Image 1 (tube, helix red, strand yellow):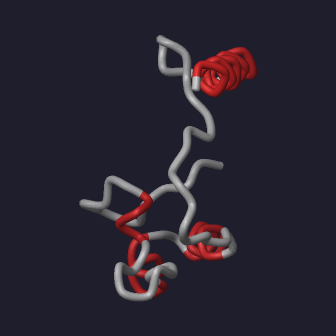
Image 2: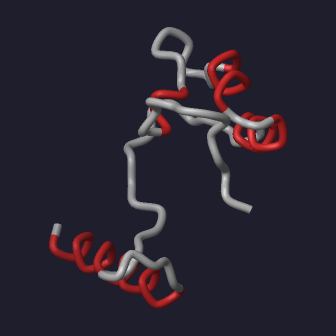
Length: 84
């Protein structure tokens, strides 16, 4: 099941769920905005500081994620690395 906020939420980015002071999950914010099961899953995701953001997956032009669209992202990333 998709992760869904509980009620109305102004959160739009994952980074908003991370404390700028500690660099860890903002536990109170997560528990306050998501259903218990979803909050538990979010908090189980380890955070790594000091790493550059990267595309983990991408959707196709129709807005749908597929293995094919992930393959194209990987292919594009490899081509970018070869150009450097």
